[in-house]
Image (cartoon, rainbow, N blue to C red; front, side):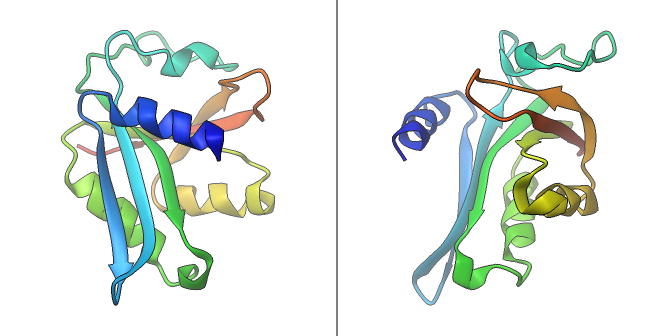
Length: 142
């Protein structure tokens, strides 16, 4: 939890950060948040997979990173994550969105959900030495 709090504080302090929170009958259900990748982003620096020239060129308006999306267990399996995701994206102006997912989560089911939402895997990334190797995924928005 401490690492999440540190990451949330860092993300929320960035220009362009936004979040969407969902409730049902006053009860918190879930949230999504992220921020655009600035020109000096380190997002792509931990890629294991080589990407095409220019793919990682950022300017603060090209790509938004979906840093977190969470739905509480009692509300899972009802399409709420999709609704939160799409509401958050509807407020973004970037031309594409990127995210990291652990391919082992749910024996691949989580990654399959993102694929069903229009994301495609572009390579692998390990942002921290103690983190798993993530699938890096993108989806065109405009």
